[in-house]
Length: 161
Image 1: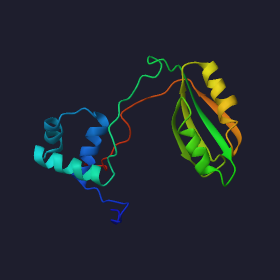
Image 2 (image 1 turned 135 degrees about the horizontal axis):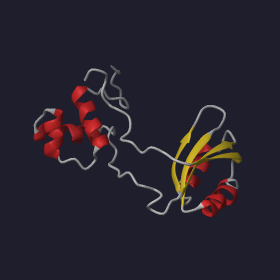
Image 3 (image 1 turned 180 degrees about the vertical axis):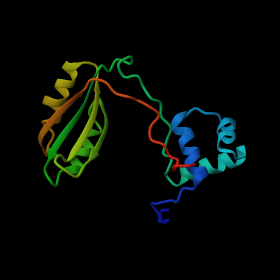
């Protein structure tokens, strides 16, 4: 297992089971969570508070059916940026409409942006008028998302648990 540091916390089997249950259903009741993790409710509360305090659990989310919510055009947009421009680009990306997620990468492209726009016209405006004009952005490449699986996410349990 990993060595504990200020930023790295060792997760045991119970922690991983709690995380897995929360990934599968973020609205699970504490009673049901405790039963499924085979611990008491009081212990479940303590574990979750510890995981939140350590920054391992940093929030609870809801998965959205983007098309039904009016966001029918989704795309991954790769950005090539100037070497010294990451902080400025990241600051601006946080303010742009329709940007759901972005990451700094190592590889052919520097930044990968996930966008959810109402339609292709809005997506086009975002890419051609907003993203390409950001200071530090040298080029963009866009991949339209035709279909996706919003499954429960990765498993947090090791094999055999």
